[in-house]
Image 1 (tube, rainbow, N blue to C red):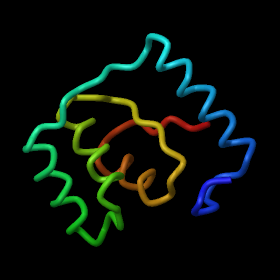
Image 2: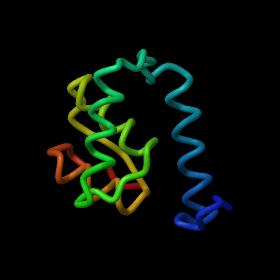
Image 3: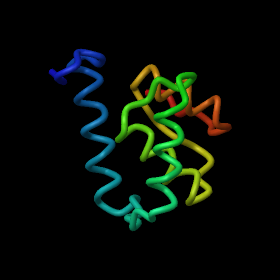
Image 4: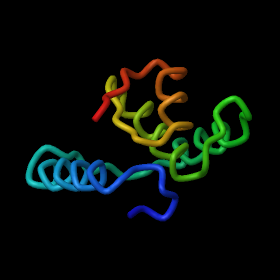
Length: 91
């Protein structure tokens, strides 16, 4: 069970399975730029988002890479995904 208890064991298994599939060939690895770190800091500082550092950094990197779709099981991050104009992928 995740530390925060925000997802159950069934969701955890589904996410781990999808992550393994991505790791087998569908995932792009990218370096994190200083610009992305600065953009993440701006997101964290904006109380509308309620984001923690890592969640904000993931969104900032996605914006920098011009990603259109974003998957998240985190409530605050999901709301920010839509607020920032991404299409939210649901599990």
